[in-house]
Image (cartoon, rainbow, N blue to C red; front, top):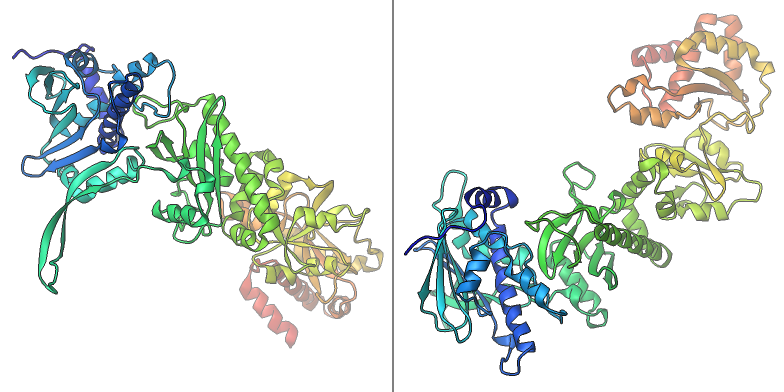
Length: 617
């Protein structure tokens, strides 16, 4: 029998498809199952247009048959089958899609969608097979056998087959170093691939499976039992109407898909029809994955097309600040590349992503309003990412995110929103005050925070390194500017400096360029000193940037502020006259204490310890 050549430019094209188009070899099974599903769908369409043809969905099955001895894997269907001409057109010409042609010929789709579009999915079989045969028959027609060992060509001959349908048989390649083709004969591996890629194909995918179990009536004697099992779920939860589903159904699906082990805080089930159509099922997790704030974390929703998984993680569907969301999107309207693994950057994709973003924001706002306890749990896990979103893009996402952030209120002793802070202000209040530190307990003890709280004003406690950067990008909220309690403010601290000119001059000369300035204040309460900053760079920002390359070159302009009414100030004034050297040690100790209050280490811990001892004498 003469071997025929592929009509497409041949060998190089087929080799490129086998080795370059698909990123993972396991994709072949998804493609063959999708083709089998298309073949059954075509039978359905044929039945719609003919009174003589019946279609009983319950009778149609896709079957996997692994044979370890022969090293073959067969994928069979009971679909429409092909005649010789269709074999020539569909399999003899690479990139010729019978499904796409069939789809174009249909005047209108009913409730079944054809999956295949490009006509290359079948050839993915050659990634794992050294030889492929296709035994096919149309109802009432002749059976044909198509055989190929790759780019060298193919043969077609008449064959025997009782029923209509198609059987694709893969003769697997031999195992080699780094390549385990035998895995595609393993029952467990085949089950997992079906569940991963084809779980929601609308027809049952069946396979004979072997299981060892106790013999009936025996306590220790086992037997091997063969069962015909359905490997896929078939009906996707997300395609059901919301009124058919309970919270338990949504939670079970969440756990079954391994989105998380804890009950999700919320689910969002969306169906959109119009210029573009999609169904989305999204979840707000209760816990952040262990790698969530690391570079290894991959955000994205699973992407399906008509129930077939195209991408396990599609990052384009979520902005980074909502990257914690879990779930999926199913749409037939998204443009895919030829391998159905990579999205084309088209308008539909962007519109879907924008819609999803709006839905997520609305759901989070609803949770904030109606379920505050769970929202605070959520924000503890993922709030930092939302605040990064405020900082990212120079505040471009402010309108989307500003009402989602919550901070600890020093006055209320609980988490509050920015709106709640502003609503509690008096008409002439100009600022939203905040203080920064490693923990709420530590921030609450800052002298700068204490002095503002003592006036009856509220102070937000910032404990994440991104907090201050985020509000600086926001600049204001509700017409009020953000203000760090540690920043120098001549308007609010109008202490007359003249009586303390000698003390100020002495401290400046002693500390030199360690500080930008020295001032005396009557607003400090119990603390003898504190550090404030001048300009846009705060001390906390300096600490954060110190961990970055060349960060040690970025310094805040520190102002040492001395408590006017504290006994240590009078002591310093007396020592300046009685013992100037001892007075210098006291200034050094006061500066070191101010650093410690801010969570900074003294520049010379040994000198600091020695000076403390010298002052005790």
